[in-house]
Amino acid sequence: MSRKLSFSVDDESDEIIKRYEQFLKGTATGYFDVEELENIVEYYLRRGRTKDCASALELGLQLHPNSNTLKTKRAKIYLATGEDQKALRILNSLAETNDYETVLLKIEVLVKMERFAEASIFCSMLLSNETEDLDNACLDIAFIYLSRGEYEEALELLERGDNENTTNTDLLFELAFCYEQTEEYEKAIRTYNRIIDIDSYIDEAWFNLGQIYFALQDFTNALVAYDFALTIDENDSLTLLQKGHAHFQLDQFELAIESYLEYQKMTSNIWETNIFIAECYEKMERYDESISYYKQSLEVHPMNYDALTGIGICLLEQEEFIESKIYIDQALALDPEASDAWVYLAEVYIGLNETDKALDAYLKSISLEANQADTLMAVANIYLEQGEYDLALQYYLEAQQLDDTLEYVNLFIGVAYFKKDNVLKAIPFLQKAVRENEQAAELFLELCPEAIDSLLLDK
Image (cartoon, rainbow, N blue to C red):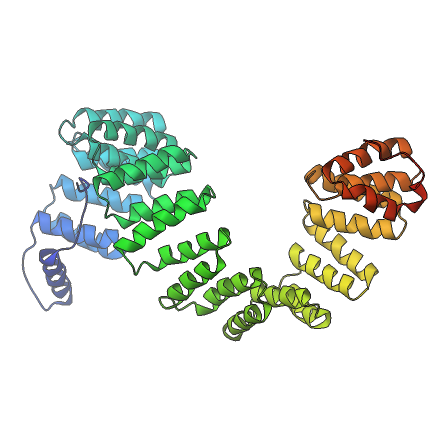
């Protein structure tokens, strides 16, 4: 079912526009009736050509000065150019106050001016006059509220329209969108499934369903939806890209690469796809292949932070610390505020046994992004090795507060307290560490051999 106010340029309209533009050039003469001029005005208005639209309207009003429809078009032009008060004055002056388009425009102006109570009155007026096409009237008004981000109001209208006609797929798409915006994801899923039940060959419904599942991190169901969308349109590049991302999130890296390579045939942004492929190889610890794809990306886009850090990480994993530092330094030159790159640089310095520089880099990263449990733990470990037990304890406790599932965090808190000669505070953390992992007892004695004769580790 099409919207009540839909407008398309068919062959006849094309001919009208051609004739009108020839008329302006002086190469054609003729007369344009009201309906033809309405189409001409609407044609330019929908393309944002407000000057051409205004010129056509002036001609129309010269030929048909009593046309309320053309006056309504003038209100639309004022609305498009942000002259809301002028638009409202014209609409209020029109005699046909119950005309559908006039009332709809009044609602649009009033919503834009945030005069919602008045807009609501006209909504009720318009809907009360609609008996045979209520669902599309609700949809037309809902579009106005949607354009202003007023999702609750749009939702109320769309649900009313849905109650009137449960098979209006145009309305259902907007209803599902509203549910997404109001974070009612299960309702959105049900709505997209309703569209699919009506017509299972609407690939957009399958794609949007996949996107919701992806956002909910239900990547398995996302893949099912993407596959259906691709069955309908195998050349849908965006769906193919999202399919690759879903495989990546499921650690299905070989399948992700297949999707990315297929997508690469359909896009000019090959450098970006090479990043995705490189990340897959990196996850599979196939670092040479990963570096190859990262470098291909750099050839096209040298100022590529992701590729630079990617190469740096792969070289870091291969313990090529000096080479790794070259790429990480380049990444930081591009973005000195990138907290993750400072962590990679710190790990390079750890590999080079330059602990003080590593500590500075870790602390720089934390200053940029405080909520990094692993980095806080790394800082604490350095302070512990340096005998700075108060500082070590401070950072261990901060790390635990962010993530109490960090491996051995309770053990190291206990160690820090023990090193500070605060045995009473150390005991509960050490006991908890042993309950979590029996190897914690052995590790504690390695770190604190002076405790070999104590009974601290009794469970």
